[in-house]
Image 1: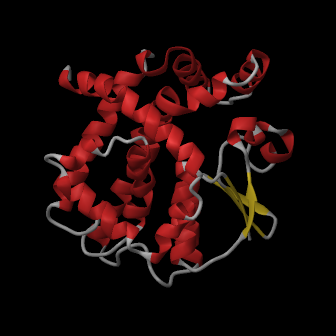
Image 2 (image 1 turned 180 degrees about the vertical axis):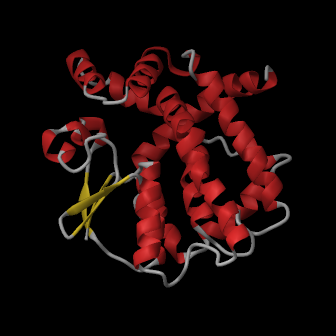
Length: 262
């Protein structure tokens, strides 16, 4: 088993949480996303979408983090990460779908607008153009172009912040009545959403739940106390996190202004 991933990628974090929970240790291949490793031909033969992670099992690639997590729980069912009760399992699946239907795109936009753009702007313009041109998804390509140029003032940012805000409200309501997103059991619902909340913390935006959504903070602390959280914590690039925290602090006032306008 081989894992192609990047240390700070939220989708890679999701998969590593599951791998750690299952006590699995694949051969790891780290891709430098800032250098465009994910768009090079040798990687695109595994994952033509040009994104991480990819899990390769017996020479066969499995792409899309949600699918990889389901595969791992099917193949290594102990400990289980899906509830046995069909109704609770349905609730788990709804939570696990949230990144794929809205949150992941919002996370990319906000991360680029606040922090990633600074790394991109340090590159020669020809390299920026090359990396953007090689993005297979035209929507993400345009969003990244906007955020690199305009930062938090890019047209796509406000809607992305509101998407995040709505998800946090839903999470908070659920976590007021259960310790985990799908009830009493830690599940794929939690591994799906944890990287996205952790990203907000890295961006110095935990004030989004410090007031009337404190149940999210309690949930995050419970998750950090689990051994498998090393799938996030053990891969932190502290210099990179410092950039995110500093840039997030600078963007805080504008984010609050966007939320007031909703």
